[in-house]
Length: 294
Image (cartoon, rainbow, N blue to C red; front, side, top):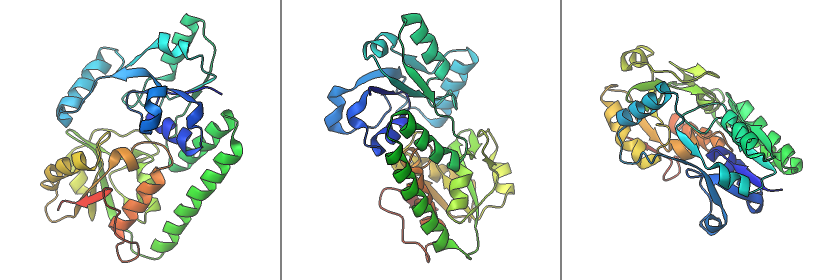
């Protein structure tokens, strides 16, 4: 089976299922082993926002969306040339990846045939279900079931470790300028880690808020997880956020690897958050995953 992934989280799922050899196309944002890069075709491009501030990125995104323009470019001829059997995409977030409708339109225009699978989870259980769905459509259901069973066992281990402990009130800042509250599956990660999410929208889209509203939720801990940023970028932004929460512990997390991509590594995110919230019960965060800034 020839697979094309049009979102980074799907690429993560593909590799976790041992389907790397079947992958032929990815996006410019997908993480792949160095040994595989030469064999993969980049079929989705976009603007490199490195060097832009959070406010500049937000302004760019808002301007493109207001103009009815996509944030990503589909290289349709390259996609058709790959002759894929299964294309994995999404309709969850225009900021995260190309919408599935654009892919279907391109295939119709080119007269190409492929099975298009849209992954649109809003909760942590739904993320695990998408792994089963990919496994079924890629004809490796047993691998998917084994992977999900292992992920659920790790979540159960965290639940056992934090059981009976006080649940700190946790505010997650998903974007810093302007601030966005945590949405989609991120509140589920906090709950699974033994925290109580506040100023959050479990299972719903993240929306802009204010730091005054976040402070009014009286968090015991603030987690800064800016979408698209690794730990080093998150730390710099968390230092600015810390000024808005004097006296409250503020942590930065590797959002890109642990928090915002709807794949198996969300369970790594639960474990990292649990280590932040319950250090007596859970070992310290692994190097490179989280850092306290205040």
